[in-house]
Length: 219
Image 1: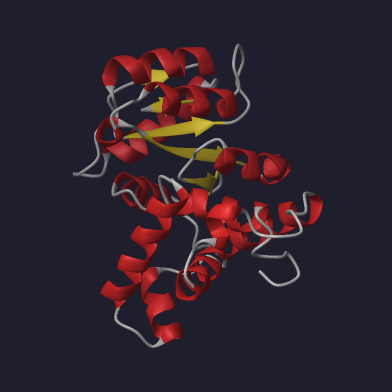
Image 2: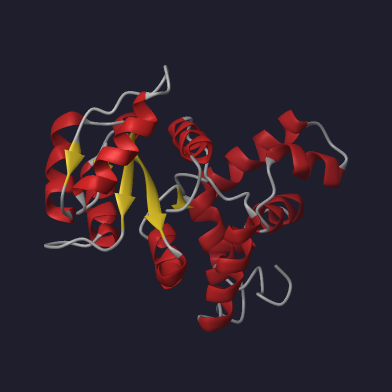
């Protein structure tokens, strides 16, 4: 599902995505409030969400969409669209529950890849631009002096994996860094999300910074 207040942008995104044989555009919305309504009606796997929209902005709409879905299996994944002059919204988008974000000037291939990544339940956090932006927000909004109780309850290895997730590393990269099997990393990631009560890696990154486990000077 596409949510953007500019019809030309929606048309362009729809045309690009419909060119992919495995992606179907099931609905569109011109503002945040309508995005919530359409998402509730259609239960899309992924919502591509603009930030600045009338009636209700994309951040509020993201939070509302993820609130209503009681069944985790039916909860949409939200991919937030942003531009360089909207960087201040990226952290808030992740905190609202978005599974990732994409710059509006991304290529068609990047857009399709992003939709596929979040549709599988992963988070779009690997690009270096994401790491820089999250580190920047961490500088502006420093975490608490000590990790939260939940983070402190993680095992040393789980905290190590969480730190590497916050650096934007994939499971394969973490496995290589720790010299373990990728399946072992997947197991650690699953346990981290369960213990912290999180939906995905995007939320794990936010928690890592907000808890003070990761510092901007050492992301």
